[in-house]
Length: 275
Ligand SMILES: [Zn+2]
Image 1 (cartoon, helix red, strand yellow):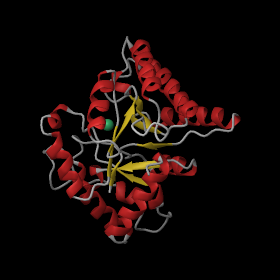
Image 2: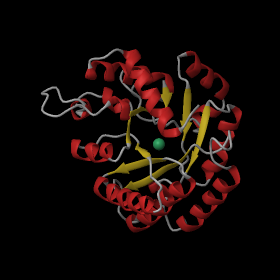
Image 3: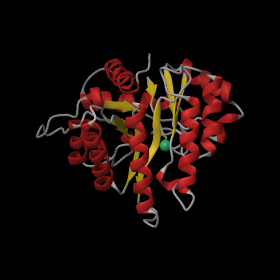
């Protein structure tokens, strides 16, 4: 299992990091990707990833909820850090992605224009640096897709591509199809285990009216410490709890848990180039 989105730099893990990482390894977690959210993440993400090279893989970016009056200066600092740190696999301890970045109109649309500008700029970095992106999108699926399409078209004009994953995907089948057609990936986590969650029907409709979304374009992710799956809801999430997401996907698609792990591992390695 590869956890493609885990905030293991969160302060709830730091005091006990060695033991936390060991628990994940013992449970069969092969790699963990650690996204940044703001300028503080430059320190915290790089610090934990340095301690476990080529097991924890760093990403940096400015999260939409972190976009405020200082966003231009914050972006500048993140970009300087990216230039200094370098990109995986050329730099083995370098950045594996730009993320998490995107749009979030859930709490407020106060900074929606600034969010769009910051998102656009970071999408363009990804193209320039040939890194995939980890996208956060909440209550903003149309705008998110529109900006991704815009930068994808720009990229194609110069013979490049914009690649990425929509993290914590819980959108409609139409939005899912749009990303799949672009060759993008959907990040699937604890949400799929929640009661009343219709994500399984979006991915693999039991009425057979639509074809299933191919498992080869799904990535496993926890978004730890958040989004803890059933039966551990209320506790901080950990990568090893991905086994419950795997179990759910195996039931949804009617294939073995090993096949789910194999296909999602392959998808993660393909998008992020993990050796
Ligand atoms: Zn996150």
